[in-house]
Image (cartoon, rainbow, N blue to C red; front, top):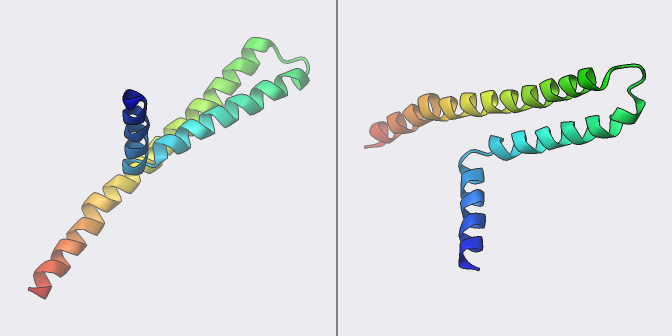
Length: 92
């Protein structure tokens, strides 16, 4: 049971450090689920083309979430952190 608790807490800790990873995963599964449900009504589109579109949409969402996460991390590291350090130096 302790290894289960460690893995759960590790996932929660990683999710708190980078909240865009769970967002990317949720978006990926949402897109795949939606496209699988929509597969019945694909019309005369070939199965392979439908699956390729599903894969591209899901990957695009994940790459977008990763990009936003990197930009947010860079903003915190290079803009917010220097401002806080500068304010701390001015208060001394």
